[in-house]
Length: 493
Image (tube, rainbow, N blue to C red):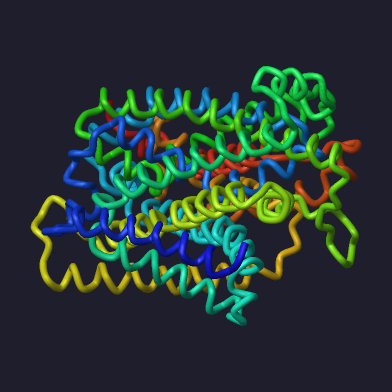
């Protein structure tokens, strides 16, 4: 498929996003930008969050990991369900009771300004790098099949894509993103379903035959019980639960959409509906990965390898197959899905980073009418984060990761740990910490976790840390907060 055809697909898709933005971005206010006037329909938010949760990483990277991990990822997804239940039953009531726009304002109410800024800082850092890696994966594919053909350098390609995102998120904020997410999630899900259908056509299999072949293949192994390995079930389940709690429940990017829903009961419906859909959709992506490798083995196709290490480049397996071997329709479907994943994985991040910075660091009050000065500042902050995101993507391209999906969760284990400890201490104790020490204390857990990660096999008889480092990181933060609190500062019942 030519670069021109791909560019036309992207252009038509962007026109759809721009139309939604034009209708939803009228009469913008701070409350509309930051919290959607608290009028978002819960079922629209639930469906729209699918694309934001899965992003281009799941779309491109997850199918490729099947060759080495089989269905082990499903253990993590099972943990997600427990994490979503905790969000709905524990965190959402707190957020709605305080009528929060930035969830880190809870830390201000509970501990003080330094804690609020610490929580917001870790979110800003984690989301910038996380969004950068998510977008990097998608832009790499577009660079290979479109921009290289036109001689456009990678930094310019990234700048063009971020500029497109700015055009439709600059004014409307969350009010716009609720509806663009619905649009993009629909295309993302359609792409995975049609990709499975394209492979089944190539194999001349029915759906029931495909299920049987996947089940009997070497890729279907799901549960793993070697406690030393990274894919041990207990590690994966607990990691999935806590990754969900921090990357959704303690993450401004995900919770800002939830808080735009009218009432707490509706917000809970959103979370429970969303969690069920996420489980099913991840099962579809894993099945797609198994079908890809079954098809490759039957067809004798040579997959892309790293020219230096000669290792299989798993993040390029699905793109390579879709563009070169499954026909024009499959290639078009892949490009549309990739475009949906590309925009969905980063557009909301620009809005929520802006929200967190404006409220937690600049002290914006969304309950009051926005002034012209505040709107100008908000626009400048939004554009500033777009530039920072561009830098993160360009610099991250030098990373040599086997799987960007693994890199994102590893970063989350280090950066969200202090957040987990802060919120857990606030919710499950009645002690007041010495607020001024919190920024310094928050540096210690990630450093200790890094030492454990680098030396665990030597220190603990071959034990390999996985994403459970997040829990250890949070426990260390919780313990440090306990040390720097006392009963004389306890909150009155």
